[in-house]
Image (cartoon, rainbow, N blue to C red; front, side, top):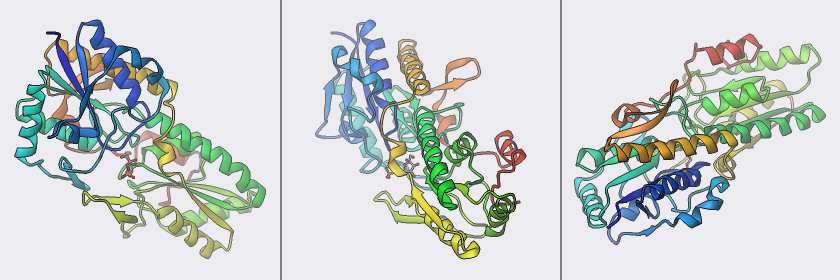
Length: 360
Ligand code: F6P
């Protein structure tokens, strides 16, 4: 019987999931292995198992197709993450049920494509004996132990496109435009897109803001005859001494961040009298075709994951390192999130250009 590996996509989707699936299936097929895809995230590994073989021939269009053909979920019996910094152990019975089904399918290893939460589950499966290899996915770019996750660059491109469009309308109407982007408790998308898209104010979770600093930047622009201002705000940004703005709590108990854009816009309008509008970019950042950068990154991650399985190197995540794609210990990737250093180079570059981080 041919060797078989499994593949699962967990957590929120991210551009490039299908590109990774394609790379894994192609690389596995060339070794004579079969690939079984679990459907609907980790839930597909539980009774009744939902899985299907992935055919080499259906991979062609996946290079540039957004989403995941396997489906995914960030809730259900497997939810391992419950809040900022809190990790819940998945019940032993659930882990064992998945492991039993894994063995019954005759699988040699499982490729787990996920962010912080899904790779925490992968680590827990590894701890009970399942041979796993992780691949770092998330538009938030907040995973430790890799220079970059896949999906991030595509999300940034989406935010920059939005900023370009907001610039022209803001300038026409002499308005302040506030763009809220995703990122959970990390400000990578806001910072990278803010620099690339020429934002005047960047608000991120790592640097709590105060309104006088933001207003000072708007007034400074007015004084040099720039009657419009572009603000980009990460969904996890908060006022100094303030709390995160969460629109609701998800079924997993994890706060669903969102709404800070409108809060900031209302406050700016009240304090300056300038017409201010807010736009929430939301899930547009997660949809659609992956960028060229993400396609090649996903392809390299997928092939490397298959190589780890061939080498029987388990409990690892394939990561982007200065010397290329390399395996790192999964446990080192999941125990903490990577955030934007408040005094780091990227923030200093912004400040050197006169961008306000709301804390000057
Ligand atoms: O982690 C990815 C992410 O898109 C975050 O940026 C965002 O806070 C969250 O997922 C939204 O999740 P949901 O799919 O539940 O709306």
